[in-house]
Amino acid sequence: MLGLSCRRWQHTFCFLLLCLGGLTVPAAAQRFAAIGDYGYAGPAERDVANLVKSWDPEFIITLGDNNYELGDSTTIDQNVGQYYHEYIGNYHGRYGPSASTNRFFPVPGNHDYYTNNGEPYRRYFTLPGNGRYYDFVRDNVHFFAVNSDPLEPDGITAGSVQGRWLQAALAAAPEPWKVVYLHHAPYSSGWHGNTAALQWPFKQWGASVVLAGHDHHYERLVVDDFPYFINGLGGRSLYRLRTPLPESKFSFTGEYGAMLLNASPDSLTLQFFTRNRTLIDRYTLFRAGSATPTLYPLFPNPVQETATVEFFLPAATTVELRVLNALGQEIARLREGEQAPGWHRASWPRNGLAAGVYYVQLRGSGFARVVRAVLL
Image 1 (cartoon, rainbow, N blue to C red):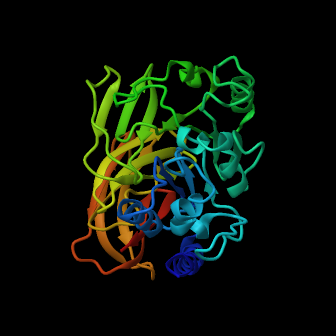
Image 2: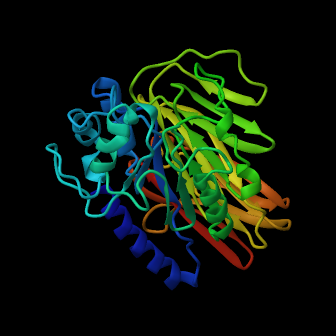
Image 3: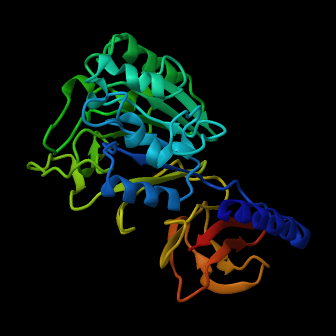
């Protein structure tokens, strides 16, 4: 109901803005979640699932190991459908209704292959392509699901049938963000370590970021100025870290959690939250600066206590950065006056503001930009 209510308010407010002065309201950011190594029924997976659902993501991607321990057909529904059935298209399990359209896009992990080479996994999910590796598009994001298991019949090296498929698909994709995700991590400071066979030239092929699991920790790495993430804290167990790789920029293994990603035409923000809703890490990818003033989706969103607002100015100019309620009334001013060209960041503390839908507006001479915020 919150999502429906927000959309109604957004339509009303957009109409009000247009009537008041023809302001443009960019499309809301694409919000999706990523979970990894999660498929083990119990309190940890339940808590992570509740965290993910609290974000009301448009869809969920998984980073493998969907069905512990053996990938068997007798356990897959309790390990997956029990917690995520409302996102799964063509769901026929016993835990509740199916999604009207599929909003759950997994990749297989090694545990999914332990029974009949992953046959229960392929029967349970209705996925694009051959169901083992595939791609799909949602607004300005193109997703590429890679099967990293050595049993993949089309291979897992850069020169394999699967590798050549990814290279060609990335080259042909026009979307600004190209997210590659798989189970085995190309680079990892965790227990399993690097998977050399999967150190494909993702950057040269045109990918924006690579997400992986397998090791049960969270890690952000930058290899040759290209970002890799490990997100294996979805519910099974917690692994210790080995000596961090030189490419490792941040790591965490203290609690279960999931990633929330927000994509706009100009930025992709990746955040990791623990199951008790603590923000552990945040990383934002930016495209080249826009030729016009740009206000980016704030984070985190939904907001609990404090949010960060980012905007880009191609030239020095005088601006006002304001918070408005659903009636268009100003309730806070975050920035005003002459601002230098480039990227800018402002903090918006909640300060006891009531739950609901609000808008952040960047206004200057001849332009206005607005993004939506949901306060929980």
